[in-house]
Image 1 (cartoon, rainbow, N blue to C red):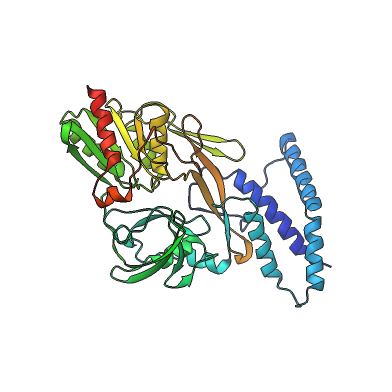
Image 2: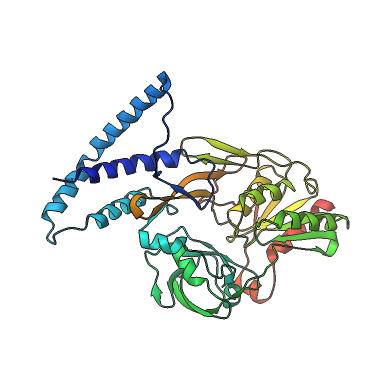
Length: 417
């Protein structure tokens, strides 16, 4: 016979996983949320509504008990008849959790066993020193979103969508992207070897990189020829909005005929920064929606007093434009505030919560919400299609040509005539 406690641990775990995912509104990416509290909360005075709610929950538990009968049948058979006895019930339980999360079919949701979770949760050493690349840690392999300008990653030729399959010769198959990232980070001046799979060409490549301290201003700007203002955002940090506003003010004093906002290879950043920055260019609301699995929505409106809401605008995006930069570009496109030029953006528009599990059993990361543009377009796994698609070839790069920027300039000059 199976152990009574194991059965109700599994059913209770499944039930609470569903409810936590549904009611975790307000938590953003990376938030750690405990699945079980140390003490039970005080119960409110029962009313007719709470009695009905309790009856519904009891029915759901009974339904889960029925649903789990085949699971326990399989559990009992393996527990009794598997050739290597005794079976490791802890590993079986962890395998069941992993399989449950994998069955969601969401690359951003995953299970991390206790040892992996301890390593991932440990304080980062030298967190501002590394190879200089924005990365996506939520897929099967850590994936490069975009290398930072002037970084070792850019200098050695890492590209968008490159997948890290080994670090210093150690296979990263099945290793959480968060843990792979920790292996890549390290003190400036030290070396790291990355084995990369490049999906576009099917190549497997090895790169030797020397880590360094990455110090890149989040905003740069200049006046181009023909009185066109140019602003490049590298990320959406906590000081980016103030820097952007100051630099736009200086540019506007020179009376530009138009403005180019360059979001290429911008891997994103803080949501608050994205809302503030978008509001400098867009005065309509909403800027975006955050939609949860139960249908609940949080609406993010434009902030008042934007200083660049009227100037003709072109936005540059590419496959390295992700997350917060897609929020900004999506709102600008939906309200026809400006023209998007370049190539399809990355498509990172979902919110994940970390949920720690009972009895030091590791943690699960679950996608709990998605971002939608003002016209309710989904960003996640889709990305944004530019109004005008312009590719950059290897030959363009070698010749130091930028046809995307050239096209943006052409559009602004045509509109000014």
